[in-house]
Length: 198
Image (cartoon, rainbow, N blue to C red; front, top):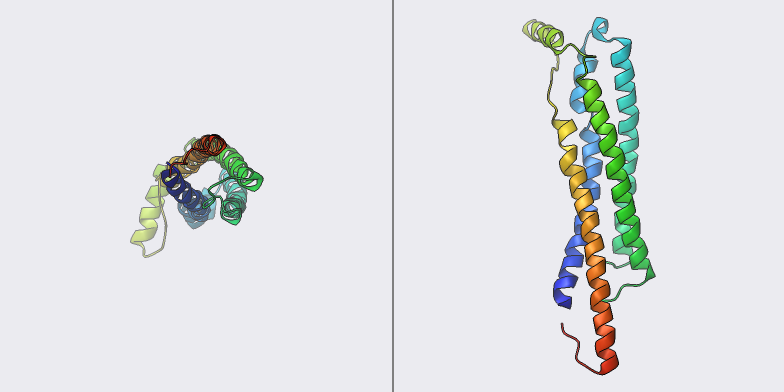
């Protein structure tokens, strides 16, 4: 049983690092489409409401990049405390696990609420997509560069990114419970002189 649990905890720690890195990569691409389109608009289309939206989104995106870096550093504590290889957990392992679970949960809730609000605001009518698309088509026909999108990809993919982060947090909790049960069984077996199963 220990071999299965050890294999799981190794894979799980790598998953947490990967999920944290994915949040960072997501943050780097998050504003790309929206920013490119709004930046390419002629000034008469850039209302104060659009400018305020872009500014708010840019501020959130900058914070999300820093949060992504923080998550990566946080996930590395699992490796620094050898949580991925320890047969027996100590205080450092529990602390690293708790830190990652709390960080993943807090970041996921914060990011989801903000991204959902930005998506609703983006499609609330502050941008007349039909007018912008017509202008973009005319610009492109005249040899100019204009980026038009009404894609919701970057808004929608956050469900996968932060869902994976939350799933990794839940698996960390389940792995820790399993580890505690195995350690307890091992202690009992050693106390009674029984062999410990691998």
